[in-house]
Image 1 (tube, rainbow, N blue to C red):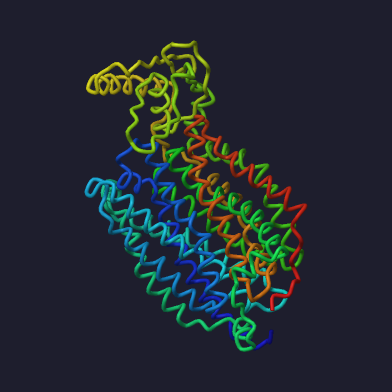
Image 2: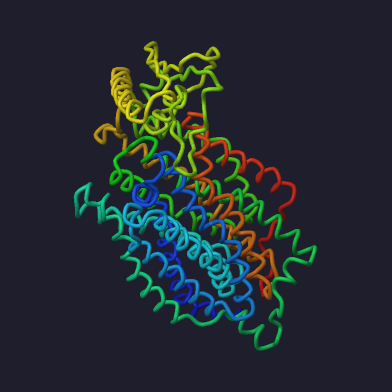
Length: 543
């Protein structure tokens, strides 16, 4: 690759990265506003189920990403990197803008969530073709020996997209009351994406095709059947499977350290939304340069040791980091949990899983009454087996709050008794020191930002060198297809489902930290298999 190419294409590579920031902004916006989307599109079910459904709709976009990878990966290897860019950008941007115009559940009923999920699927398909193209495009412009550094800028785009979405949300919040934002203001960041879409399309149209693809095309060496060549060749398929394992580990670390941390602070620790955004933005600003740092370092010492070290650190320290986050963000909750732990004492036969997929279940058994209240309040609890046939109790420290059996009551009588019981339980929790929400004045802001920054270091370790590693794993003529599928299975299925799986685990067990065992387990498996199966790729030719 000539010096002339290196010098002239730097601006082109920067333009590719900027466009990718906007695409990730579109996708991350949904995750950041999941609480509001729950209220407007999933109000036909109970609050806990609605939030899980909102996360499932978020995950739906990830579930279809591998299919988008197959479709657009094939087009990218046949049709070219640039043209595929433009199609994925248009689909993502248009569907994001239209989310801001969907009528609520109260206005059109079940059509509202169905339309929302449809747009999520379109976004997921489009993003399935985005990453492989961006990483391949930048890598095929990169000077020899600087592949990790160049492609790490693509990796920062995901974090910068999240950062941009949080900034837009924060600015919108500050211009109106909390009630107005919850009612209609949350739509504005979606509508603003139209401006970003137009700017991104303008930038992408200025890009030239990658020199590697142009050379292959001129010599007639492009693949006629990328899917067949990528996935029926046993040697290439083995590499695809290894890549999938590594990406799965990267995905759970990255999503835990950014998305799940954001949800955890706002929903579980009940920190006010605007303050949550400010703290996360600050942590992202501090931590984002580490993506580039570790990409650069991987050019010196290799991709494998950095990525596997990130898996190890995450598996060992995510649990204590989230405990520290709880202490810093909501010290009153941490203190109350330690001083007066909550225990549900109930006959297991009286308990149901706190998930209602169709909105028809009435949690009116004594155990369900206790657990649904605590799940809705976001309070951690332990389970203790009670005698068969007994009425469930909530023990708060030494105080006991007995529930009641509501199955034999009429709907009106159950509602009245439940309201009175809710009031009594809330008073008992308040007496024990449990806060209804985090006190913003008592949030240790510097500590929260520091913890977020540490977790961003982990993100940088597993994600910064990743694009370079994936590009180096596969031959140029089937690169777009080969790397896109494992990336989007790993990120789309293992990472995209993380918030849903983790919060469902918390709702089922009552342990606010139990959901962390999912990313810790996946990261540990990826570490062990990566040590055995992953070969160092630094230095592999990509021409």
